[in-house]
Amino acid sequence: MATWSRTAPLCPDLNENARPDRLFDAYVFDLDGTIYLGDHLLPGVAETIGLLRELHIPVRFLSNNPTKDPHQYQAKLDALGLPTPLDDIANTIVTTVRWLRSHHPDAVVFPIAELPLVTALSDAGIRLSDNPAEIDIVLASYDRGFDYRKLQIAFDALWFHKRAILVQTNPDRYCPFPGGRGEPDCAAIVAAIEACTEVTCTANFGKPDPLMVAEALDGYDVAPERTMMVGDRLATDIAMGRNAGMNTALVLTGDSTLADATDLPPRQRPHYVLETLDQLVPPDIWGRERDHRG
Image (cartoon, rainbow, N blue to C red; front, side, top):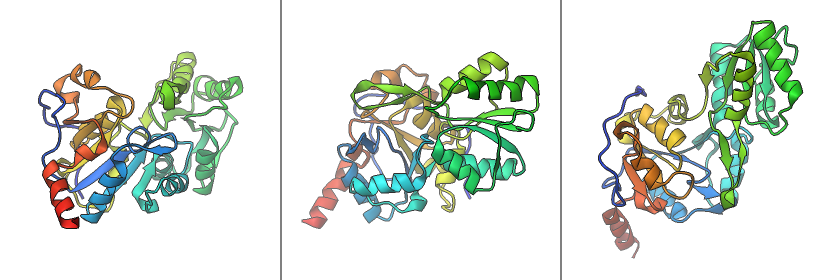
């Protein structure tokens, strides 16, 4: 099994021509803003994923969104015309449950989260409680039902009883929506808890932690330098790929821009920049495929 490091080579200066000139051994894709936006596939997605699958190159999908379980993502991809095996999808529900079962199997958890994550925790046999006197782990997540009661329980468990630790499913500040709007995400809830308790969050189960990509490619003996991470967010998708020692491609169909990327220090920049996902595949390979099909 390959080791997913936290080092990566320097990146050359970026420009609109910074695109791959070869194929890689495996590809990991972000979903929202990279594969689809809202209820629509983004340009070039169906053709690119279809070609990679035809060439028997592993394709995996990741998301920091803990409000849907992998079955829901599978149903969405199916509905968008991109049928995908369940094992090819991982999100922070998957990584959170696996981490808790592996590192704290007997812990009592207070989830500040929406129903899909709470259900997954319960189904995994993890004990849940809102009693601050017995909580071992306060788990913060994207929660549109976050209120003062939940903040008080977290405060009591962390500050008053001083027995719990604080962890989070993902570090996103906001969740983008079509049309330029968005909603506050997990980082806003973590910030509220940290502000009142002065307790620091100690673990993250989503991008940019390399834990996510290691889970996505579990079972494949592929070296990080021969894999490609593709996403629309510099702070999560690209940072995770860089942390893991992967090649990285920023697609300009979602959150981050070329200007954002060039403003970063060289070690934090994506290796490639794509206007649409089909630019992930070199033109000569597209040409050979067209000739073969013709």
